[in-house]
Length: 357
Image (cartoon, rainbow, N blue to C red; front, top):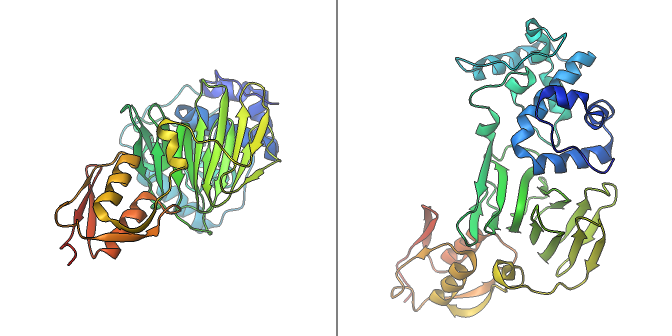
């Protein structure tokens, strides 16, 4: 089944959908990729999706083994996070809200079931819709409507240059086994190296997995072409319609996908484009380059103001290669070389230095 329905808007509609029931009950790997892509395209329906998952598993009578201590711990977590007031969605036929204890115990199922997620939304497991969903506390959404590219600083010190008209969703905390982000539009990613925690970018048509590198993902909903371009390192790209056929890309390679035709084309050398996309081909290599010149390039490339005393730093220079490190790591290494410090305030970088003699 290559395509999933767009119009699932209630728990009942999820449960009546053949593709959804097959995914929940059979857990086929190719279905996993398709539903990951569906959630990336419809992030506003994640909580409803989670409610449907728990409801189906509970109605099916699926259970797992939990120790008494695990049950007590999970129950306490649910109680602690319950709001003072909440509204309940219309129950399904045969669903008794007195089965709260069963739904609460089913919290362990979600740990096993989530699409790569290691945290749980307890109220979703109980099929309760709150006025302030707990998922909002875990995820942050950035929508770029500024008219120019915008630097998004991720909790793991990675950075994303998000193109205008694009949206990025990521976890606020770093205590998860995977670093997952959901992209609609275009973003240039510079990923902090961490082999123990793979970094995954989900879009509607492509899933890109890396450990630490820089690459660009382009996947606007209304465009007929999506692509991934690699600047440094290696990535694997998995098309949604071919979940068992990941494609390896290395430096300067590109994978293009026709979103309508599903045709894949791999290029060994991508052609640089104009506009925000040019950063994927820019070089940040310096040889005794004056610091004002370095900061001018970074400011122009990332559209983030860098505030410093230009006169004070005019005699300072920097030598090094900064192509494969995130934006803030570039700033840190420059400051380290010039015995300076920096801070981020209101999406601006402030440099504090005594200058160079």
